[in-house]
Amino acid sequence: MSISKEEVVHIAQLARIELSLAEIKKFQHQLSLIIDYVNKLKEVDVKQILPWSTVLELNVFREDKVEQYAKYQELLNQAPKQKNGHFKVKAVLK
Amino acid sequence: MELFELTLKEAAQKIKDREFSSLELTKAFLKRIDQIDEKISAFLDVEKETALKTAKEIDHKIQKGEYYSPLMGIPVAVKDNILTKGIKTTAGSKILKDYQASYDATVTKKLKKAGMVLLGKTNLDEFAMGASTENSAFQKTNNPWDLSRVPGGSSGGSAAAVAADECIFALGSDTGGSVRQPAAFCGVVGLKPTYGRVSRYGLIALASSFDQIGPITKTVEDAALVLNQIAGKDAFDSTSASEVVPDYTKELAKEIKGIKIGIPKEYFIKGIDKEVEKLVRAAIDKLKELGAQIQEVSLPYTNYALAAYYIILPAEASANLARYDGIRYGYSALGKEEAVKNLFSVYSRSRANGFGDEVKRRIMIGTYSLSSGYYDAYYLRAQKVKTLVAKDFKEVFQKVDLLATPTTPTVAFRLGEKLDNPLTMYLSDIYTVSANMGGIPAISIPCGMANQLPVGIQLIGKPFAESQILNVAYQYEQATDWHFTPSLSPPL
Image (cartoon, rainbow over all chains, first blue to last red; front, side, top):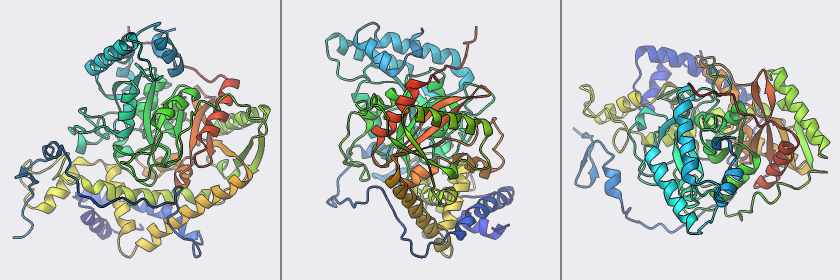
């Protein structure tokens, strides 16, 4: 299989998704199928090719101005925990 | 004829002429949903009270002589990844099960302003990831033509609702075919506009460089009427285009004599269902009969488009879905489970419990292809292949005005058939992803029935040439007659 169990565990850790042992096994198989398929891109000669093409081909600029969102309390109310107008999270440092 | 069988064009005329009120029309649809959605399961949420209230308000305006848009009083369904203020917007995910949108998407706002009556929100694959709507965390939707089959996806609820006459039209979103493929499977019209033609503001993001909102309708003219209302520059979406929005109904009636249509040979390869190929070829003959010049063309990188798509899409999705962290909104494992003791476990348990398998797979593929050591081999290479696919289109459009292809390689497949192998599900998008890679407009319209199941033909146009593909689609539609309604007798 093109992806090892250890790689699945590592990716899941980076992606912040907890997996059970059964899931690790299942995803190792399924992700390998997908990676095997997309590996056909290796056949394409891309040496002289630039990435990032878009139809619009323009940059959009605006002033970098801070605005207070009028209904921020509504947004805060969607959080499981808030305190003094902020999201409350578990301590990061011990 | 029942009121729920009317097209947008017909219903708008009759409301304008006051043959019936929006309230009567809305009631007819709510009754229809009551009677048959048990079988179809297209809707996640039906907003009965709000719909009736809006219909009355619109009727009041019309009675006062204020008629300003063909959408006034028209009952509409919206895919549940498009924000609708004050109503639940779930994206078909457990992680957003109780999420109430605090603002309207730009398209919602525009349709409300034009006078639509919002009937409710339709089912979809979780975060629009899928081709069968089976990845919804809440329910499976059945194809109105054969209830044992999928409606396609990810806008399966919207396409099924239109096909089953549960709304006059619906909105979907199309990242790699999610409007066109279900439209083909359900025998209705689905349009993906040029990238940037319709604002993405308030569309729950999947892959931001591909996502585009589009109408799913009963006829081509209806698609033009809806696009007229939703297209245009939006200050809230920096990738929305400032090109002038024409009246998309203006060119529908134009003759298509002399128009050059390319048939990409790479779209008629092994894997395509024989019946589907036959019907699409017959439709191309019909276009020729109408005066179009048909010529075979080649898009050499077609074969690699799907592989590149399934690198770029998961990469963008993994970044877009990082916001579901159990801290700001949506489902959180915090306080629910003993084991959630630190910040890391708030993230990883909330996401483990909140996301379904397909979402997890794509986040992991995206994370893998963006991670150090693999970035050049996968993500950067896929972006370069995208450039090549776009170049293919640019070159072919020097020779022809538009392209005609099948929308899908097969008719609607059976529920459960492709669930075990994600890759076979991905192959369902093989004819639709390229238009998203090139950012160009494409439409799927019905072109016949194979074993009593609808088949769609896809027309792909130049950037911002929506008027042209609508014109050709309309001329084909008028010369044929593929408007059927599946025989769904309401339960006694």
